[in-house]
Length: 191
Image (cartoon, rainbow, N blue to C red; front, side):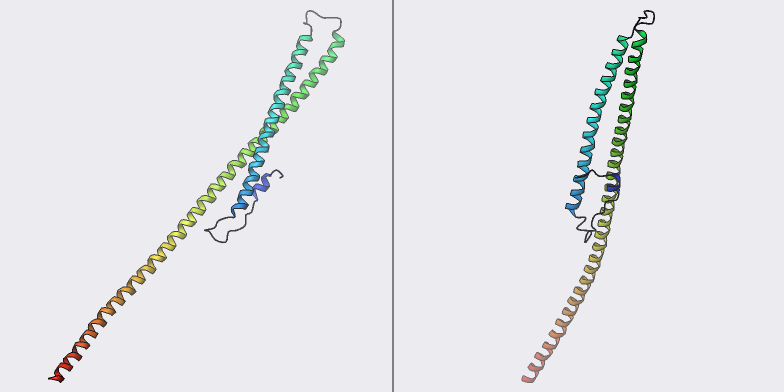
């Protein structure tokens, strides 16, 4: 798997979910997070390797500087070999300066990559938290709208039930009156 770049992370596009309830495709998001984790692990290993190289190079520079310092004669004790040895000390100093320069540049580059990685990590976390907040707010809004709609439907159904109960009571009363009137007519006719 290739390392992700800042461009890859910033421009990632997940498939739109079919509905808000389903959310993004979990496998697709997990795969992307695996890539991010692998990139961070790679950068962390590279940082450790560069730190190790820097420590070794600094130790070597110190060793070369100490060797050059011990081998140089004191100014008041000039030696006959001073002219020929100055050239070799100059070469050692140049090599040490070059090594220090390379190490400094490598450390700066390493620090820049680590800072960029941390900044990107913080940005991703911030974006994810903002997305989480947006999704939760949207879900709560949908929940509230659905609840309001259901309450309205419930109220309407309760009114219809009350109307049907009133109708039933009225119908029973009229039916009872009608039947009593019929019974009364039957009783009157039999007498």
